[in-house]
Image 1 (cartoon, rainbow, N blue to C red):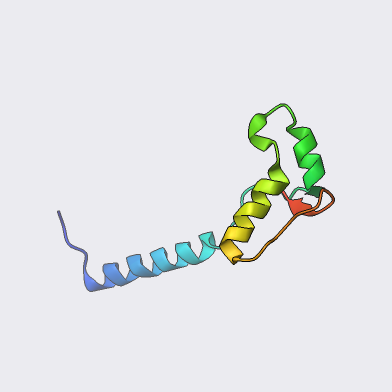
Image 2: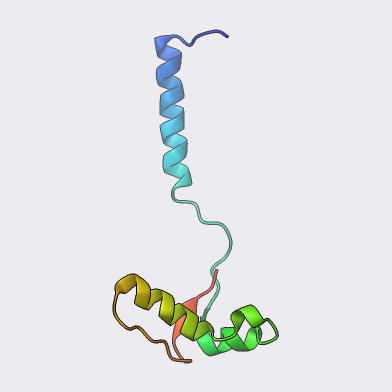
Length: 80
């Protein structure tokens, strides 16, 4: 395998750095409006995995932040 010259190596590094800077700012998809937790639960009422969504999220956040966190049905979230 051929080795790159110093100049080629520097060019490759600049291209890589430039590409990684560009891709860090890219988001895929269009933004959706916020939804209440009740709307999400209602939209997925036939899927047992979504049953008790507010309680499941509250339990996860409570464990992570080490204090009780509860969500109401009218709390809004961004869905992507």
